[in-house]
Amino acid sequence: MANPYTGPVPKPTPETRPFWEAAKRHVLLIQRCGDCGTHYFYPRPLCPHCLSRNVSWVEASGRGRLHTFVINHRPPRNFPIQGPVIIGLVALAEGPRLMTNIVGVEPDPAKLCCDMPVEVVFEDITDEISLPKFKPAPSTPT
Amino acid sequence: MATDCRQLRGSVAIVGVAESDELGRLPHKSSLQLHMEATHNALADAGLKKGDIDAVFTSGRNMANDVPEYLGIRPRFVGGTQVGGCSFILHVEHAMAAINAGLCEVALITHGESGYSRIAMPAPRWGDDSTNNQFELPYGISGPAAGYGFLATRHMHEYGTTSGQLAEVAVATRKWAALNPKAFLRDPISIDDVLGSRLIAWPFHLLDCCLVTDAGGAAIVTSAERARDLPKPPVYVLGTGECVTHQMVSQMPSFTRWDAATVSGERAFRMAAVRHADIDVAQFYDAFTVVPILALEALGFCKPGEGGPFVAGQRTAPGGGFPMNTNGGGLSYTHTGMYGIFTIIEAVRQLRGECGPRQVADAKLAICHGTGGTWSAAATMIVSTER
Image 1 (cartoon, each protein chain N blue to C red):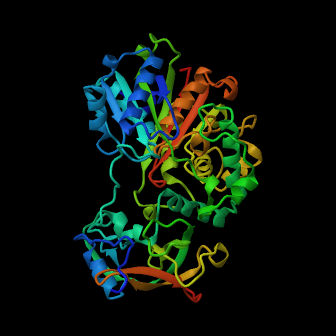
Image 2: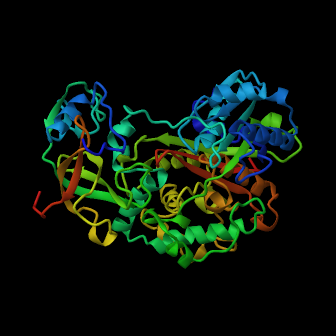
Image 3: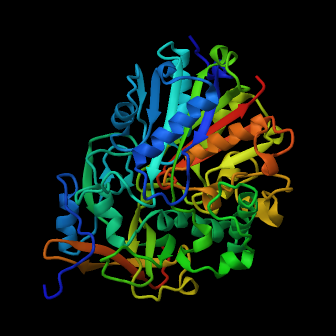
């Protein structure tokens, strides 16, 4: 890459590698418990709800709502964006929440609202790692 | 053997408390030196000697090894629970359990942190393959302000809590700091000053955020029986509680409630068998202005969503109806990184009547409550000079 990525780069572990391999293909994988039916995130080989190990990977719809957010005016040194950055917690349509950046909208609290609909986009930060981020989505009944 | 936690009520007492010799910006002192000073001063306050200590509780990576070595103590009971800034309040509960079990008699709880100057501090925590570095840090989280803000934003959305209500906490706390010669920031501030200070992580302004300082603090806990022979009035531990729900804030169960605090508070009040209205003074860890507001709700001082209106009109300030953070809190007195020990120190001093111009009249019953990590842990303690 012309400009090496300067921010934190995730290093997968055995239990998270399938997630990152899918993200590289711009697919958002989460996990689902075969016993209690709970969808969960982040990846681990047991259901955090019922402790079952009967779990499997499923592709998420990529749609969700912005549960809550902050606008960080002081991102870490070397972070690629050295201005205000929107850090959101998105509640996926399947249920789990994940941390992400909200992109495609100005970092202005007046432009953001809890529960606004969002959808996934991927940012390729290295040859191996793509980060799921979210952008505002048209409002549709879910 | 106690089979009901209520049997622990009043079984131990805090008999000595102290800070390090200095607090603030101390590039001439290491984190372990700050532990040492606080311990030395707390022993003097308790009228005890180093040889009386048979248990050490501390927090921070390797600290449960480092502190006994540095102080030359060989504890026969060690507690290294590290769940963030409230760890020291949990340590009181753990010390109480160990003392009641007969495993130790005199417990030192100690904290020292070169939070600002970073002298002899452990290396940063997260490896490249940590869950944090995979699922949170790539999104620009820097320090706790961003993580704590998620709950503030959602609380505002659900309940109409305002930035002005958050600012009330900072203004009231500064008024207490003005009465404490040890406080780092003592000049008065207004709500407009808070709202006009620069944004750190919206919705938090600079003056919504705690200090970053260097300091140490220590407390000594022993059995109620042993406490009676010591020079200062024992401060009895009437009730305690603790809970952990997550490490990464993205895994927090709710962003409108503080579930861990609800759990810790419920046990502390059940054990203490006191009413909320009987509490004379509160020390609630104020890492950010929103934290005590959520503590008030979770502990049952007001209903969910009513924390903002509760603190309005300077209710927590000197002369207000709910004296809170009477030392000036983490917002204005000191905040090393793990503030919990300082809630204990101030509660004990208030109950002993040692607080001079900031003394809450006739304070008989105090509550300490803290957060750890990013709303990750909570610990509550109710204390009194009366059993």
